Amino acid sequence: MAEPLPSLMLPASSWLRASTHRRWLDLQGQRLLDFSKPSRVDEGFAPLGNDGRLISGEQADTILTARMTHVYAVAAGRGLPGCAPLAAHGVASLLGPLRDQAHGGWFAGAEQDGKRPGNGRKQAYLHAFVSLAASSAVVQRIPGADGLLDDALAVWDRHFWSEEEGVFRESFAADWTDEEAYRGANANMHSVEACMAVADVTGNPLWRHRALRIAERFIHTFARNAAYAVPEHFDLDWTILKDFHKDKPTDDLRPYGMTPGHFVEWSHLMLKLEAALLREDGTAPSWLLDDAIGLFDCGTRAGWARDGAPGLLYTVDWELEPVVHNRPHWCQAEALTAAAALLKRTGHAAYERWYRTIWDYIDLHMIDRRQGGWLQELDRNNRPSAVVYAGKADLYHAWQATLTPLLPLAPSFATAVAILDQ
Image 1 (cartoon, rainbow, N blue to C red):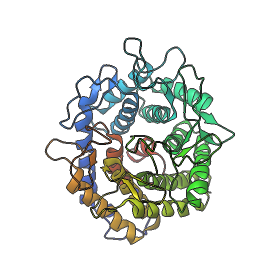
Image 2 (cartoon, rainbow, N blue to C red):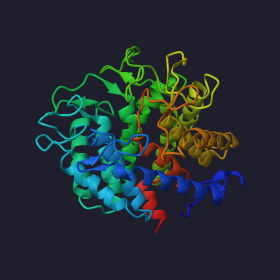
Image 3 (cartoon, rainbow, N blue to C red):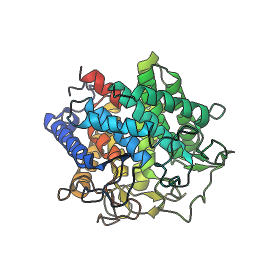
């Protein structure tokens, strides 16, 4: 893939300019894709264990299925064999057994013996990924993708979007009653990514401007006022819930405190949003760059090597003191992605150093050259752990980290691949 590098400011010695490094990224991405292919099951995709085999008794997971559909659709656009059929399987699963045929929308998995998986609620986090998957599948003309995108956007718009607040609501009961009295940064963060992708695919800038409204509230208001530490949990009056899940510090989606990995994830999303808005009409708020820099600085300061060992830890408290020291793989992937985005946007040598430092850490500690894939979590001493994340279910974060350095900041993944490979 020949990327038009977005900045002549990149240092001549940057890894991003080195053909050998770019080939290495491509190879690592292909290895991740191959490792995750056995996750296909009849009703979608299911988690893999550390050995790359399906975990006994696990059923298709809707979030995982949506993420796999997105990844394999984009990979299909790069001409990689085996990926388009997997994306098609994901689309069919999301239209079929994983969808609520009675009320619309999606649960965490297919019904088993008349019982809904998880807590039986419909989550904004999950629906953001269904929308992302559908948009990526549309770009690659995967059968059924247009219908899936129409369905997903209708549900997303009608039930989850709050025009008054400029954010996505969190969750509902099966029949769309009983709205949860909660507003969450995590679901809205992934909604920013999905909104940008949907805007690129549909040509409707409404979705891009919804992404901007989300960023204005969560980042330019709350995070900026907290020196770029990102509060995660709010009630319906937008009061920060500082004790939320204090009894569940290792929760995988809504842990207690704050998550430095999300600080850096928001950082690169601010840059992608800036680039997307500039690409739309040549204008973008100047604060998007300022906030991206502040978020990365705060995230690395709060989370990197806080206990003497390298790696970005999971959570911190309201004084930015470590709570969960374990290092999830996705935190490292998002820090890497943010460093690459800031390097492309600014050309500053500090981000080149971070980019190399984080890849060195991932290479030496997280890439599993014995059983394949990436270790999903390490403890504070960088030994394999499974306190928050067991097995090797996730492809999405790691694989995107291998592709992001090869792409411009805008448009979004699937659209950029389609344009650059023409």
